[in-house]
Image (cartoon, rainbow, N blue to C red):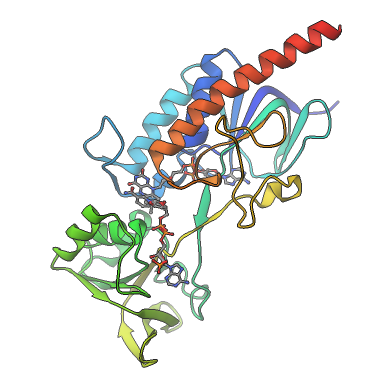
Length: 316
Ligand code: FAD
Ligand code: NAP
């Protein structure tokens, strides 16, 4: 006997987009499972303070994740652990293959978000967990009263750098240009923070250290080509995101950079396969926009399944 589990809707990824889609679909009385390769919450678990989510002046990312999870399971949606490896959409029903079993479903909502890009320099892998980090909330406390550097000039680098100033002795931001990409309000705070310093036109060439931990980095000034060394016990890397779409590559639903293309109903070109949140090709990747996408798709699967059921009844 097959141990394939059946749900009306399978949501892949339990970040803010997936959890909101699950809330809407289960509230419409569909059976829903959210599959995630880790704990629910997605990138919110790696975010210090969130101050641009309506209804909260300021809330820690993991706390917001808990609240959304509570909403998402209130109407019966379930959460299950598993990494989705691929999906089959050729047949009438759709099959989602995970490393811990298969799921059959009528509709799929892809909400797999994105993950941090690596610098790709020597020492980055060697010292991961030994000074190299991509998450200030997770690792910041290990660097109390120490000197750390942050790489990048976007919202993540500057906002997480500000968080680190509460813990570290100094935070030096290394940016490859001389203008930040981060929102102005975040920039203003950073420039006014006396524990924060900036090195412009600076790129990391190597992360150095001893057997146990990193001790510094070699950087190049991309205007003069001078290479210098900075002593630091930690480096927090925030140089952008890449889409988590490896499992869906064969479906031909992504653009040239790997982001999934949808219409404004979050529907991909494959009927019954929706995509929401950061994984979509879109301009603004935020919790609010992820939640908005999730609501639209949660309602969209209800309409899709209602039409599917009606056409099955007609032909019966
Ligand atoms: P994610 O949150 O990335 O969730 C995707 C989920 O899918 C993850 O749980 C992942 O484990 C799972 N997954 C991936 N692949 C698979 C697979 N193959 N099988 C099963 N599960 C899978 N936005 C704001 O609005 N305010 C902020 O203050 C803010 N701060 C941020 C700080 C940082 C450091 C970062 C990186 C981002 C921040 N953002 C912020 C952006 C915000 O976190 C994202 O826009 C939002 O989390 C996107 O939600 P999502 O559900 O689309 O994806
Ligand atoms: P991002 O906006 O893509 O910024 C990446 C930064 O890294 C850029 O400054 C970029 O430099 C730099 N960079 C890229 N590749 C590099 C390399 N190889 N070496 C050195 N530097 C490199 O990424 P993000 O900051 O992670 O933000 C991702 C998304 O999440 C954005 O949509 C952002 O708005 C959102 N977010 C929102 C909040 C918030 O609302 N509070 C907080 C965090 C993140 P250039 O500037 O030169 O390109």
